[in-house]
Amino acid sequence: KIYFSPGGPRESTLKRWHAEGLPENVNWMDVLHEKIGLKMEKPADREIPALPDLFGMMPHFEEKVLEHKNGHYIVQDIHGAVVEISDQFDVTYLRSAKDFVTRSWLKVPVENRNDWEEMKKRYDPARPERYPADMERTASLLKDRDSLYGFGVSGIFWKLRDWCGVENLCILMATDPDFVAEMADFWKNFVLRVLEKYRNKIAFDYVIINEDMAYKEKAMISPAMVRRFVQPAWTAWAKLLKESGCRGIVLDSDGYIGELIPLWIEAGINACIPIE
Image: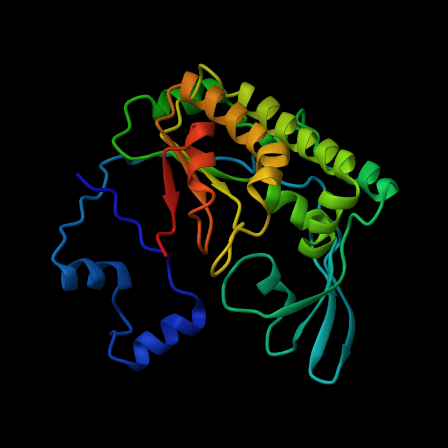
């Protein structure tokens, strides 16, 4: 059996597919399987509980439009960033990737150590919302499943970029590496503490670590920076998950990943997406 999982289309992509002949009343995934000659085996599981928001910010920032002018919104998003977007989209497009929404970052939530102290308060691993209300029942429902069960988590580069902005983060790695290491260590340990609650209760089949840390020809940071700031978390997460029975440790990054693959393998990662 092959696990086949193409990325789903954004709104504008699906609209174009319909314009090019995809019928309106069919599931695009069913059509894709038919076109390429694959038989889709749907799992027989009837009751697979959804995971709670394991690693989310709690509470989120208030989502609000700060200004509307010249065809653009200035918005504070739920992550605390202030961004500018076209007014052809509303603020809900910033919560999830429903379409290709270009934005300009005007302010990031962590610009100094005071901001960082406040941000840490939003990531308490003891929040009950991070765990099933009845862990034993959830574990029982999942015990004999025939479908894959897993989760995604922001990696170090992804999460620190959310907090600091990509340009600011890259500069901090050179000018204040101890601060970056502190934030990276916090996120590594926060994720570990959440995962510990699931250890020996739910055996996940896979985890996808989201990083998006490469572009057309190079990684966004050097291999030396990866080793110092990012790889320790990958290694620690992969070790705990494999000990708990998780077989697929997947790293998500776009771009040219040739410099990164050896570091992923060292850390215990055994798959990557997408294949660009």
